[in-house]
Image 1 (spheres, rainbow, N blue to C red):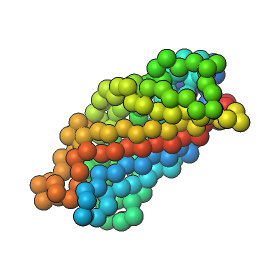
Image 2: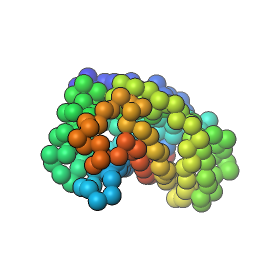
Image 3: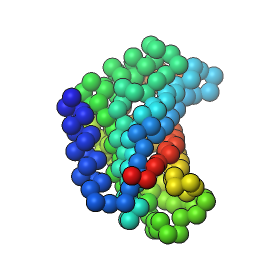
Length: 180
């Protein structure tokens, strides 16, 4: 219940009185696989994302336990040992589409995003990440990829697994946002 209240406060503060596009079913994938070893990848299909079309501000919230792996044991290890999702249940991003103009948005437009990513109780500045926006039928499709280091978020990969799990994590995202 506490998480729901935090989510409502987080997004209501951001969204009050603004032109916004929103989704609660955004998809985020991450991969930390190493060739020749078992795939280390997960998908989360319940990201909440808001874009303010007046100024290009963007906010995203992801519940960490919603990441799904092909291997149930890997999902358990991720939640208990690495993400510590009981202790740090959510990841957030607050940022801005640089030089954004809703009036100039066409079928496909490339932008850069900068902002702050918080995961595992660590906040990291993310700058100049290329994203693609497609505006069609009163929807915005927003997609892109970010690469981060596990060490940047105080995630320690045990030495026994260092050859099987990459310390570089590729995070891809795809959101279909509807006007609210």
